[in-house]
Image (tube, rainbow, N blue to C red; front, side):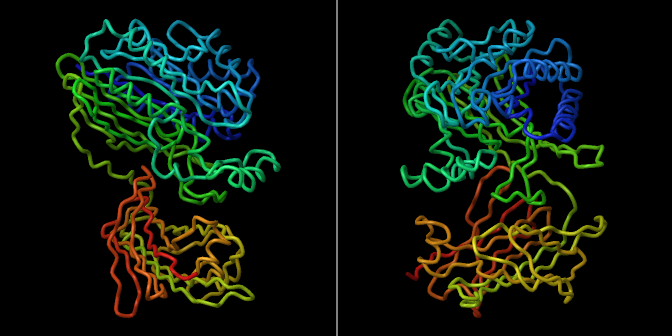
Amino acid sequence: MQRTVVHLSDLHLGAFETQDASVVEPLLTALSKVHESEPIAALLFTGDLFESSAITLERAVLEFRSFVHRVRERLGDALPIVVLPGNHDRRSSGLVGPHNSALFDALRASSDERTLVTGCVTPFLAEPVDRSLHELPWLVASFDSSYLPTGWISAGGILRQDDLLQLADLLSDEPSGLPLVLLTHHHIVPTPLTDLSRVDVNTQSVVLRWAARNVLARILSNADHEEMMMTALGAGTALSTLHAYARPVVVLHGHKHFPVARALAGPHEGHGDVLLVSAGSAGMSLSWTESDLPEVARLWPSFNVLTLGEGEQRSLAVDVVAFKPLGPGETESRSARRPLLRAIAQENRWQITPVAGDPVAVGSRMRLLEAQASIEPNAVRGGVRADLSWTLRAERAEGSEEHTYVIVEDAFEGAVIEDLAVAMQQLGRRTLPAKIEVPTDGRFVTYRMVGGICLTRSEATEARGELAAFEDVSLVNRYESDRTVLRVSGIPADARAFGSVLDLTTGHERPAPVVRAKDGSVTLELAPCPTRMLLQIRWPITRP
């Protein structure tokens, strides 16, 4: 027998005006679709229910009760719901303090008997969830990692050793081979891609934005980056302690908005294995760049579906269900499901079966996407950086609807786009960030990014900071394509270029072979090329 559980995280209610119609309704539709094929037995929510703790308590209670009501309308009146706070539920915009417990205290006081709002017994942080509520074949417990009562600026949290040891004691009478599902908001191991991101302060005051960008990193190395500000204190010790639970453990968390699964084997005899499963944001789409353009490729909102086996076959299947937000005038939301993890609990260990984890296929199918970039040194008027001239061509597959292929060029200080032309028709100049529309009928699009490439270490340091050591040219493959080609000419002859392919759904990046032709050009080609892949050609900057 199997039970289906939904793992939701990072809804961020109140993040923007159209959220309810564009994201929440499609979320409910996607949940209903899952429920029709496999009845959902419980909903586990791992934090950031609201965008900000500054919301009035009266409004928060109304919105929470409304959301719970709408979920149960779709999934059944008796659905058990467990909710954990995140840093956005504790601080204004998730970053600026002070720590505030009033929001979740109010939610707990107003909740019904089938809804458990955790994180309200501070300063104690870990709570077993009564099996009479969740009625699942496995153990369930929560850990309020968002408890961070000191400091005025942080999106981080804590995983305190004492609480984990106390939780182990509370669960000590349970069968040793029974898996534990532990809910927490913060990650124990950094998630791909976002661990290199800068702290998002775009919604903060001008003063705070300036300080985060110009002051923090000067005082403390990497203090303007997410991992310095968003990690959970004590994560390393917590992981060791979870291994020492001597039972198979699954940690469900959110916080970083990427659906990721990790399998960590217990290193000592008698230790248990730990699976780390992160959920994407159920209420927001995520950009992989700092561009504010709506056309930039985005990660769809998503949630995880867990299938728990009981009895002798304690199997675990985790799938990601991603759904498309509704744009203006759209009435039908699409969703897609792909596997993330497959495992079977054997005593205190997890036996893993690798899955393909194919990217979600969306939109039109392409026959060809081809980009040729040429580096032209010393072309900047009055500057020292090089230009990057592009020739782009896209062909949609037979039967695909007519559309344009959108390329987004991000802002690079001092760079502009000139000589933009479609099939020789001149369209002029563009400031950055800019949207470039490429017809999908095979016509060529050309333009020149003036000052878009650094060829020397001094140029790169001035433009990107002291850590800059490589230059790159990249191409986003938005849709499934039979063949995608990125070709770059003008890379310095003494620099060895290398390639990579980044899955913009999971954040996983892998090396990819490149071919250097006799004329010096370097080519990276994928045939076929899955949806939402970022092709990059990089090379070290060796000149001073």
